[in-house]
Length: 305
Ligand code: ADE
Image (cartoon, rainbow, N blue to C red; front, side):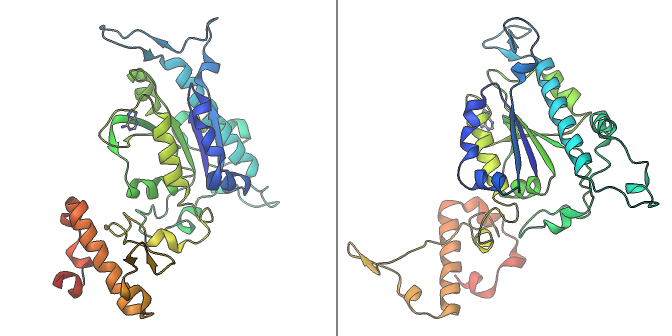
């Protein structure tokens, strides 16, 4: 996967070099780049914002530097994809049934809304993940997704994280101040798939902190990023329930004992205990999630609880 982040404060994204995300980059599972739209501002002061038409508080990000920054990363991704394409065997029909394109032609077609036709098409299925709102048959040549973090977006959930983890190329546009001129988004909808996403019902100063959270939630779902993929199947928000409480040694600590069932060695009882804990915890903390459960996924012991 390739991730581009557009931000006028690139230093905010430095933590993405750390830990599992940094390792995923080193291991070649992820390509991650931060681009500053200020580099595309043309005046002496590299201005990227201006006062809002119609009046009001704050400043609005100007559309042109953002459009050029987006064009540059989409073009770069298409060129990389074209270069990565193995050379066609002599006499073989052109890939995808079309005439093979030079890298710059692929880049141009990507920016004209056609996607990058040279990219292999069916590795999305190979990336299917547990609980994923899978995109079967998704062409890897589909256009990049532009994520626009905004308190006015659709709520970012684990299902959305799985959807994004199946993409080839994500671009995050971190607005600041009062946001980016709406015409940038109107224009971008003709070039890429635009997805405004909110971390939750509160307001941050800009998109960078939201991007740190979203990129971490998405990239940990890429196969190979997390050492033990089993840890993905048991965690909160997979299967519609919060996760069960966990314990480690010592068996007694400050007058508190580890629940006896967990010491029993009886796998069936342990699994039942954990499931009950999930149900009780979810009912107490997130009754909205219990109401949203599909009754078909509840077993008889769940219903007896
Ligand atoms: N930018 C400002 N507030 C935000 C939020 N709640 N989620 C995503 N991006 C934001």
